[in-house]
Length: 290
Image (cartoon, rainbow, N blue to C red; front, side):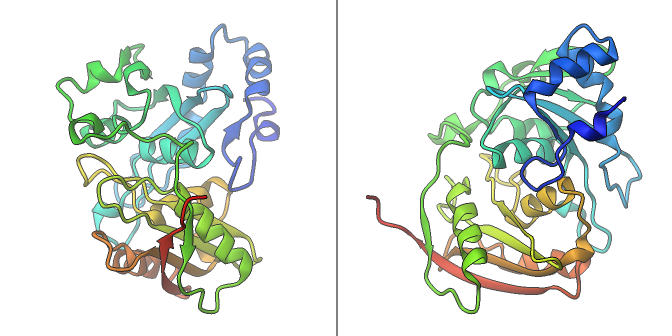
């Protein structure tokens, strides 16, 4: 699509995102009458992000942020040499990107109908009652229609993922972690969504040029479809156009003796994608409210 590369961001924050103000202009240039038509037309761009090293099946997703109107790209990511359960589904990529940007989505276009795993993941987010899913065949369905008789956060007494919520965290032992890594890690940890384990966890990746990319865990009422913190960080890495080989160090933090421990799985997956990278684990405590 003409001039698309000039509209899409390239940082961990705005990578693979078309800003809201540019959407109407892009619709006009492409001669498309609605934002839904534009999102469907952009699916090949989203599919180009995919890394299906096992299946060879590229899935793309485009979502519209509530409030900003920005369009966010997502794609499936598989990891060679790692368990298939480490796979990131396109909808997980998409919703995690929006979440780390502080937004939720109200409209999603997908290149293939969402699997049950993804429907369950999307059902964790606040606003799920109003979420509309589009597929290339022309179907326009609510998430409730795709996932009837659903099991949601409400069943466990929770309201669902709200990117505006969070709790301040403080590392108990900074080790040899620099001040900028520490700040990024605590910020990401404060963003973690962990209402079920009560063990918020986050990962920061330090790249070969000194850049820092972070990711926070996003839990799910059904547990298994939740997104671990390293996968969340790798999503942001890919969105920024960086490769796994640029990772020089990873630091994961979580509460001591938490109900969930992502440290071992982080080391295992990191060993598959960036075997030369150093990996450290730290603990933190919830900061007292002020």
